[in-house]
Image (cartoon, rainbow, N blue to C red):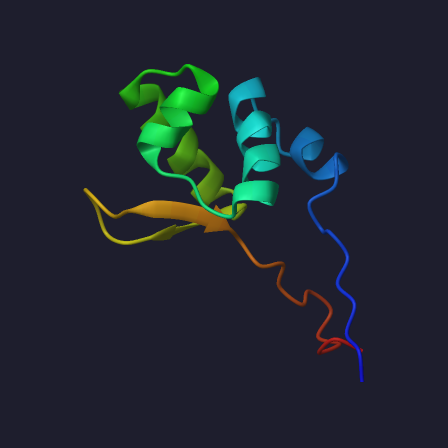
Length: 91
């Protein structure tokens, strides 16, 4: 048995959620790098620390990212897994 997954994070998703350019850039970054820290977000987007924190928390609130860790060093963000919205359990 082979299970194929399609990329749920298409271009239409960020457009519907009104993401800024930094946040869109981060989603592209995460598709290849799998995780991002606040410091990496700052480096990739050119944002200052407070803006990076605000942008990342907004992505978590919109359920695009999940935070791993509570706070401080070691905390990073990963792409959320698309939930089964229709209850089909993968069928």
